[in-house]
Image (cartoon, rainbow over all chains, first blue to last red; front, side, top):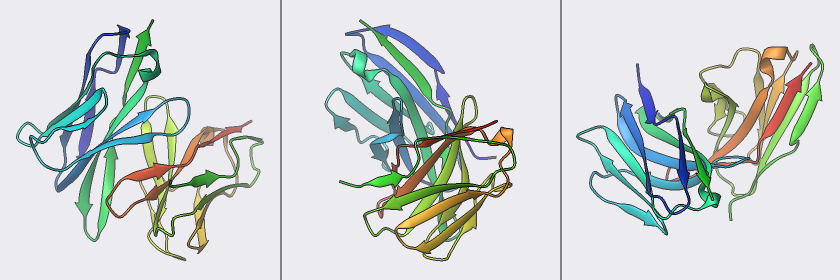
Length: 113
Length: 111
């Protein structure tokens, strides 16, 4: 069965720390891997990764995909309290003529001042 | 900026009531999705639509139906609400490149 597993489930850090969130997957027809940030409301898009080894970066956030290890990491450097959120990973796969998203359960990050 | 608007942020309904959750997009995209999100279960796909008047069941369609009469509007209908449908409902719009853009969510409580 296709699945996406995120670790850790939750994490508490202090401002200024660096964190690494993991996402591993088992899917049949991989197309892309997506990262989202969810604060109190709806998820907002962070990154889409399709190629192995190419880092995507946005400010203090970066992410990379390893297709050999079937995994991705999301790094956040110099964390701030505003980074507190649930980080969701989803893998898109081809399913016939459609594309299907398989979601992980998320990593809940709390950044304390 | 992509705008996905869900009509109701918070609703409280009684068991057996009919519930309509509306979602409107302003991007002329074809792909729209309804998810529910529950603690420990993550995001689960209820229904999706790739075009007007087209609908496909997702992973948990039981107890739900949808309507897509116009491209910009995708409605989720609970014919007879039950307490196990208390949840956060998220509408999403799919872009051509694969990202999803979410509405702000509708938190439904069924008493």
